[in-house]
Structure formats: C-alpha cells, structure tokens
Amino acid sequence: MSKRNSVRPPSSRKAAPAEGEPSRRTPKDERGGAKEERGAAKEERGGAKEERGGSRHPPRPAAAAGATGGSSGRTPQSHWLQAASGTPVPRTPNTSPDPPRRDAPRRTLIVAVTGASGAAYAARLVECAVRAGRRVHLIVTKAGRLVLADELGAPLRDARDLAPLWPPEIARHVEYTPAEKIGGGPASGSYAAEATVVIPCSMNTLAALAHGLAGNLVQRAASVALKEGRPLVVVPREMPVTTIDLENMARLASAGATVMPAMPGFYHRPRTVADLVDFVVAKVLDRLGIAHDLAVRWPGSEKSGPGEQLPESCD
Ligand SMILES: Cc1cc2nc3c(=O)[nH]c(=O)nc-3n(C[C@H](O)[C@H](O)[C@H](O)COP(=O)(O)O)c2cc1C
Image (cartoon, rainbow, N blue to C red; front, side, top):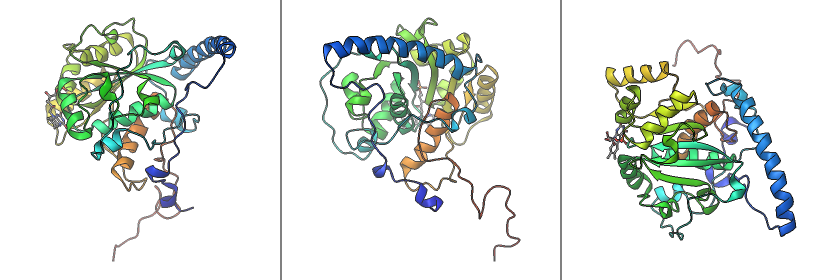
C-alpha cells in the first residue's frame, strides 16, 4: 500500500466506544464488576508507576510508539469537527460534573486551554485521552473561551456547552472548570493528576508560567505540576515570536516542562486540517505515553526517506 493510501481520511476512521463505557449489566454483574474495577484500579496505579518509570519526565516517544489499545477515531456525532464547520449541534441537558463511580479508576489528565489560536488541538487531545481511558479536567481561560467560540463555535458558558465539542460518551468523562475559579481541585498539589497539558498556550500564559505566577487556575495547575514533579506539557502558538517568548520557553523547559510548539509536520502527507491537528496531538500523546492510533507516524520510504541521497539538480 502506498504511503498516501495509508493515511485514512477522518470519515473512514473507526468510531470505537470509549474505554470504560458501561454495558447492559444485571445488579449481580455490577457487584462482580465493582470487584473487577477495584482490581483494575490497582493495576492501573501499578501501570502508572511503570509508565512513568519513577521519573518526573514522561516516557520517551519510543515507549508509546508500539502501544495499542487506544482508539481515537472520529465519531459521526456532534464533536468539534462538526462544530468547527458550523453544523448546529443540539444542547444536552446539564449533567453532574462529578463522574459516576465506575469512572474512579480512570487517571486524570488536566487539559488547560488559553487564548492562543488552535482550540482544535485541545478538543482532539481531550477526545483521544478519554478514548485511551483517561478522565479529563478541562480548564479554560476567559480568552480561551473567546477563541473556542470563535474557532469551534463552542462558547463554554457551562458544562452543557461541552455538547458541541464532543459526543456524550466523551463529554461524560470531562469535568469543566473556568480558569477564574481558583479554588478548583487542580489548585492543590493533593489533586492527583497524571499530567497537565496547556494547549494551546498563549504568550501571556507562557510568560506567567515562566515567572512562577499562579493568578488563575490554568497557571496554578501548571505551577503545581512543576512543584510536584509531575509532567507539564506546554504547546505555545504564536508567530513570529520575540526573544522574550523564546526566553520564556527556555525558562519553562529548564524548570522541567516539555515545550512543544504547535508546529505540524508534513511527512505524513496531510490532506485535511484535521490531519494537521492530529500531527500535533499525536506528538503530545506520545510524550505523555498515552496510546493512540492517529495516522501520523513516519513509515519510512524507499524513495525519499531520511538518509537518501538527494538528486544533484532539480532540472
Ligand atoms: C481570536 C484570537 C486569537 C489569538 N491568538 C493568539 C495566539 O495565537 N497566540 C497568542 O499568544 N495570543 C493570541 N491571542 C491573544 C491572547 O488571547 C491574549 O494575549 C490573552 O490575554 C491571553 O490570555 P490567557 O493567557 O489568559 O488565555 C489571540 C486572541 C484572540 C482574540
């Protein structure tokens, strides 16, 4: 199969059920299931240790490269792609932000969205993380909400506004807190998050993080990640950047954060904007050691792979 053919269009990507989705079960099954889940929780905690390898840094991409089990296909239902294209999506009734008990074993990923362009990166990351068995605590700044409304048509006034972004089986694993709510759980070091990702990260938030500010819940969650030695991934988006921005990135990197500017590659031969989004999101997931099946890996090439001799002239 040619490499171009190996890049599946979004519409053909399979819509696997989110991991941990409930099935029809009897009360007896449920009791048995609870035991299983406690076992699974234990296993997962063990797995977390293994995945992190005792280091404050997330595993190298190689650790995740062969990982399987995550499914991140786009669903045909309401989600950020439809929202971005302006298709109206019905609002669902308000649901409790507290996840049901059966979700307890899911590890929590904090996804912080700020007012930089690229809200689609965050939407896709949340979708993939939930499908890979995570619960997501979504924190959005005021400017982030402006950009979400502008780019994805999702103003995020309250939890009901998650509906345009993700189908219910994803949204039910997402807890949303506006960044102004400084008393939210992620403000505390005792809030056991697996990792924190600031995506997209504005130069404003980048500067705050680089200088230890914690004036809103995004900034506080990120500084908590640093002080607790948990993985912090920052995805800045700006162009061009000033030396101030570059110095802020360097400061953050030397404090232990992973700085991954939103710079999509083209070697996976993207055909849609969604393919470009997937490239960046896949890099973040790799860095976190979260399994995914986004079609962005370099399969090697007989014709023009790295190390091949380039032709002497282009005539
Ligand atoms: C539509 C829109 C797009 C923006 N894009 C960017 C951007 O790509 N990068 C950036 O650093 N700031 C961008 N900004 C500016 C930030 O939103 C602004 O600096 C804001 O104060 C950031 O606040 P926050 O860091 O609390 O989210 C944009 C603003 C708007 C309204």
